[in-house]
Image 1 (cartoon, rainbow, N blue to C red):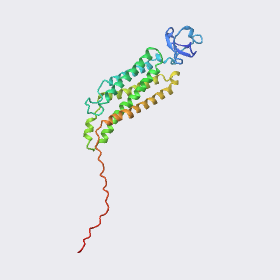
Image 2: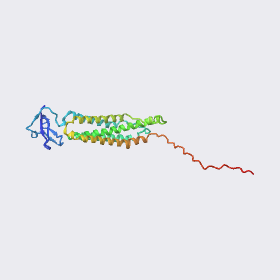
Image 3: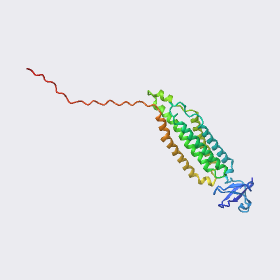
Image 4: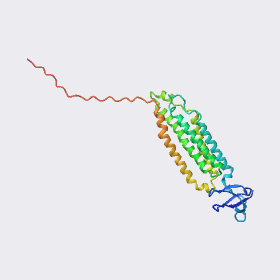
Length: 264
């Protein structure tokens, strides 16, 4: 397939594309403007190339398959909130705060799906949509992982105590939390695959720092959720051993003088 060099009519950037795209709509990876590829846009008298990959990365199957993988993972995250995370028995640890957790989980997952769909259908840069999904996957990983780690530590601390059996019975994670954990890991992997497929584009080189910053903020957000909400909510529902006050030492009174017997 022959390739041609065109010039973006907005930023004058030289781009490469298959000649079959003449007359079609394309997006400049530099300025992100969308335009119709016309003969008037050809550079250097319609210079034709053979080989080299185009900068119009969003037509590549690798990038689009990465977007599809992120979308599937976000749907799995939303479905995970419909499954049971903990037993519904109100005496179980976590049963009092998990419904609100699942509702927030489903809402954010669907919002990320909508963001990705809008960026795809609008033919704008897919970077914001994919990064949003990747960031949410990172937060979900720390969120669900924090729940499981807190459960594990509670059971471990209760071992060899009189509350070991009670704590073990009160803590039980169901399939939903494990699906959310797996889906969050797959979301991050899918977003990394998308970035890898588009790594040769100037646009993606420029947003490398933004990718790192997004993930750092996602880690911070996940840790805040775990330490300010998840751990306190779980630990407040755990049975606690009664604390016995140590006996206070008796203070000795003043010495009493022995009674002297008077002889008559």
